[in-house]
Length: 497
Ligand code: MSP
Image (cartoon, rainbow, N blue to C red):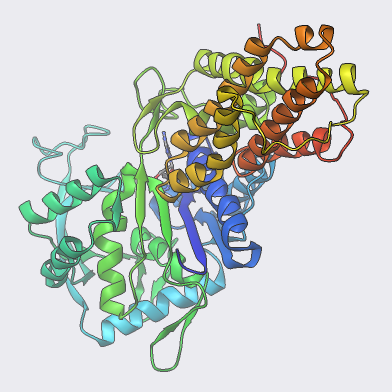
């Protein structure tokens, strides 16, 4: 592990409000950022998120809302920021592609690549639907009709600018062959590799004529054109944390990124376009790109038109923030698709949070109150007198941190949480097996002390390891058992009926 950690989420489009899908990537990133701050230090981690604000989708959404694109973007960008605040997202920087710092770097990148001959002027030919202002491929409009509005499409040719992707295909293949860990999970690595082996890359059209699209970054060498939104947006990862110097060398204290997080829908842009852009610029590549799965609703994609979009604010109002964070990170292994439903949240909540964690904390604190007047007994735990159950629990307490660290090194959130819950599980079993009420009756004072003390240690450890996943719950646990006398509160997760 290096001595700094630069982590990014995608820049979310501002044409619509944030939903649970956006919150998933951002919560996962937040958990890793919090974790890494513990591992390598607060000031060694840089967590970037933000909004993607140019392009046709946004220009159209703004027109529909009767606002200028900038005013419209300002409004939705604030919605994302507001949501991140409610979800306790500890980002270090929020970049917007309409900011000056970003525009300046995009134009510099365009200049460098144009000077180098990697961007050239060419003809773009396609089937165009004028009312929808959209280009279609022959295969999408087989009868010459627009797939959206059914009106006839026209074959048009326009002058545009192209980036030489094809020139770098062999280089990228070689790079991927030598860097199997560049793309995770490995299924996504294989997908990218076979795409490149089976297809010949076309150069990428990176401009749009201003008469068709005005909301974009003008090309410095062709001001009648604006930059294609993907080419513009990817550059945020470098425009946020550094600059090109007078010799066109990129300088940054944070680059290369240690991890770009996203879902599988935007894998290719991050594993084909982006590495080639960086390589052409002479800038180093990110360490790792991780593309997780999708949250589906009744096995179907979420979309505004289907009316099945779930608002994260409603979920946290109903179930609480930490239960929501827990559910997303625990229910589905990171990388796979999952089906989102409230009944699944309630099930996890009642079994893992109320029954397992909440119950362990509450019953332990109740016993500290009852048997020791609220003072945590001070005993040496290294002696377990051959008690195998106690030895097992103390070993698990010690092993928890390495297990959680190892899982998070691989972005395996559900595995990390499983390890924490295994410890909670053995502690609850220990209570049931020991039957403390019998110990008390028999006045086995020393054994009772040790028993309670072990449970307190389990809870402390669990609280520490939960910090990155469920910051509020970790803080509550600390408050309740952080010192030598407990402060019992109400149950952490009252059951939901
Ligand atoms: N603006 C581009 C990204 C540019 S990055 C330089 C974009 N924006 S987006 O708003 O559509 O966000 C896509 C990302 O949001 C996904 O890659 C994923 O991180 C997250 N998700 C959106 N819907 C999702 C689900 N249904 N499930 C899981 N994640 C989802 O693409």
